[in-house]
Image (cartoon, rainbow, N blue to C red):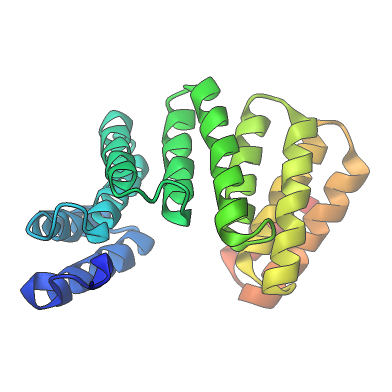
Length: 232
């Protein structure tokens, strides 16, 4: 039969893709009210598709991430849990989609100070994504980085450093040495070393972060100026 993602393509599928991409573009630009309108329309449209169409899951997930950005955390949690329930119903709970959504929910719970459940979900997400995508996949790196930030928040710096090193190693292997994600990972690692009192490594990784940002953005970008101030 047809792939669920392509089912009903004539019955609103093209419009759903257009609305979803518009929402993501607006969200990246920081226009959250307009992004919300696009995502809400896409979600409403996805409800006309077959019950387990994966586009319904994607729409619920998009809404949860948007609401997290708006700090409407209780509502964000509800949408994320609905997405996970549909994935379980769909019988794909060992797949990458399940792992990514577990990580999304963990981020929401961490912002709500529900630290214990957040940590359990990050652990599960890393296991599932390691199996589904490979231990050195970009998805695993992203989850490791987010999980490290939670350990930072809890002042568990050794665990944070271990996860950030894993993330950095994957980004260097997969992306090369001049990408924004790597700069952020270096910066997070520098913060953990600084908080743990290791100023030598903190400076080393701050300099590495700055080097990548310069290659990516150029010297005049505000993020580069800010990073230079931190090293002064």
